[in-house]
Length: 111
Image (cartoon, rainbow, N blue to C red; front, side, top):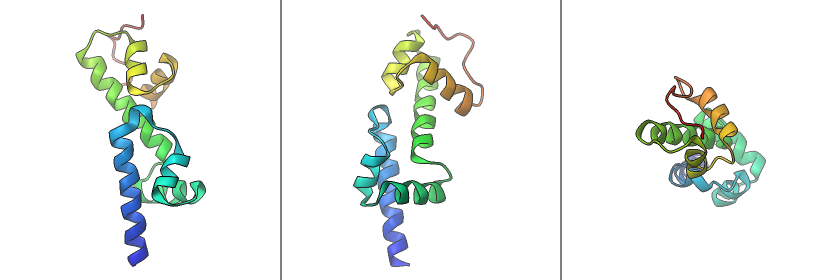
């Protein structure tokens, strides 16, 4: 059981890293290295522990941050997408459709 606790601590550290640095997330390779695991093993145990892959967690976290920004700013969607780590407005729109309960707000400026 001791090794299970150690693995969970490393996974929680990786999850905390995602929460703090979702906007410049480097990838599963970097997280796996930080956790001291192979990429395949890291992704597998992360998904078992948290119910989603690290990549899905990053996308969900970015979508939530973008939605939060879109509700309080009049910035164009392309600026918001860039601020939270998306490469384009289309990738942000896909993430919002997938992870945001209400989808893309009606008042969003796409300019």
